[in-house]
Image (tube, rainbow, N blue to C red; front, top):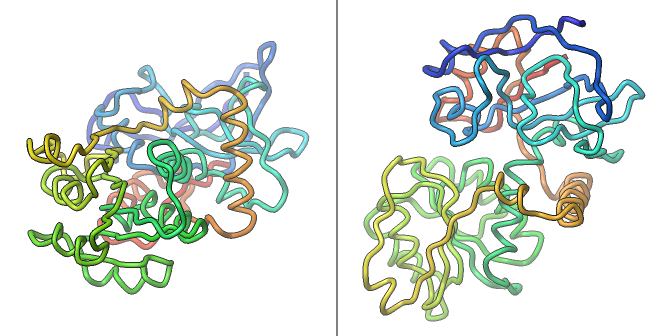
Length: 319
């Protein structure tokens, strides 16, 4: 048995109070497994929800959180860790078949953040409507990690984005990143979007907020458009006006990347990762990092990750 450092939770609750850095015993790899030294793992909103006990998929207690990350095999190969591996640890044993090799040219810090947010953005832009160059994409929470990926991907493919935020100081940053329009959340949002898209409107809206924000961006869609909900930052339920269903025929859909991975074929997963790696290697997809913390500073890292004013992701250096 090897002892390695890991973040272990015994119960759910306040993230900084329930997450502790300690030692766990790591047995030798079983048949079909290999030892992985975890290099980096981000702190995602899903991780916060796991610690709080609010996420639908959680590790058995006591357990190690961390939904994604990247590591290094004993032969030096860089790999993406399996989904829900429990990445907040120094090392672990992983099924060899579940590891995804990271090609040269992709920084390991960026690779560690590809499996969730960039994958969510790319799948949502591809799975629900067929976008042509010049088409509009509406999104709220545009300064989130997923939102920034959507801006980068849309710019690359020639799609135009209308990006809804809550603070005016974010506008120059998102505009510099490639956003075509940035609007402030408010009662006139639907009319403001219509003024930009004109009579043709937008065919898709991506919702990570819920409540009134979701209703407003749905109301700005063209007839037959689709709104895709992948988050609920306001913790308010969706409010679906009858008229948007009856007269506008707006489709309300949901997306959860965990389910996408569960349903995807090996070929579909391989194609997704190949595209993400290519985009990351070329600098088209890039997630800014605000701070990197060791496992021993987990309380500080979690507090930092929950601050509302951040310019990048918080990630853990695990070994």
